[in-house]
Image (cartoon, rainbow, N blue to C red; front, side):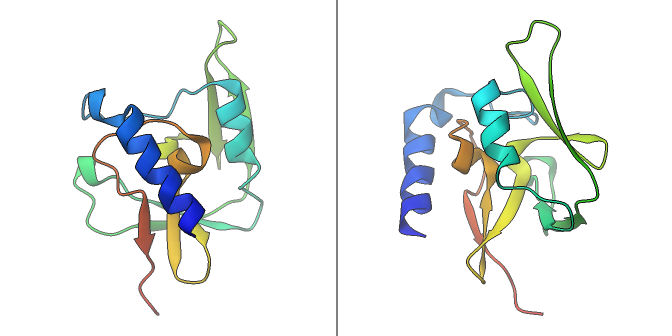
Amino acid sequence: MRKIITAAAAVLISGGLAMPALADQCQLVGKSQALAALNYLSIGQTIYNFCELCGDKTPQPIQINKIAVTSGEDGKLWQVAVNNKNIDLAYTYIRYEPKYQVSLAVITKCPTQGVTPVMKIKAK
């Protein structure tokens, strides 16, 4: 957990502060970032969508039925799709340890602004 939190701080400090506060911060990413995200996703897994900049109040669970990675026309920018919908790595969280969710942007080192890097999951 400490390694991911440290990575989150590095991402925020290294480049996130210079980016505008916009949605779609990490929807188009480099190939290595898209493939890194893919390594943390699997069919049947529950991920969470949470966009504070969009006004979301609570993370929304999504069960993965289908995953795909596609390249843009220029081959330089890539996208990750879950259930046939492109996701933004900045606002997509996966479970890390039993009680935490971490943003895929942190894991893939995609700089963000206004994104909570690690959240605690409320007990159900």
